[in-house]
Length: 153
Image (cartoon, rainbow, N blue to C red; front, top):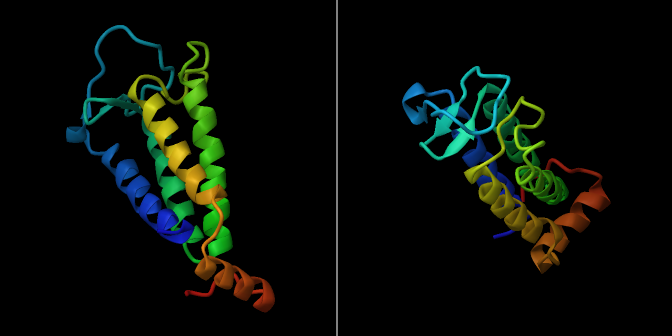
């Protein structure tokens, strides 16, 4: 699987996760204790494990749409993977610090989100920074020579 298919699959997954965060039956009410989240709209635990709120769900939808758009070209998919690796790597580290684990009270990134963000960053880094296969190189050369990044290969 190459960077393009990673962008497609992760894009679809993030859209599904983002939409699931808006389904009341999939988000459990938070208990007492834990970090304080200022933006309580839609706040709860997706699948009873992952803390989310409305902004968190919107970020998931945006990342998913970005993935689907990036799937259209190898260069776009590679850049998406690299950006996702850096973005989710930073979020995983932020989730470890009590002062940052709610993104200044706006988005909960603590608890199970830390390991999920770290796993996402690791997988995205693999596809974004690995040496491209010969077919990916041919597609890249085709994009550079034609100046077109919207071809479907």
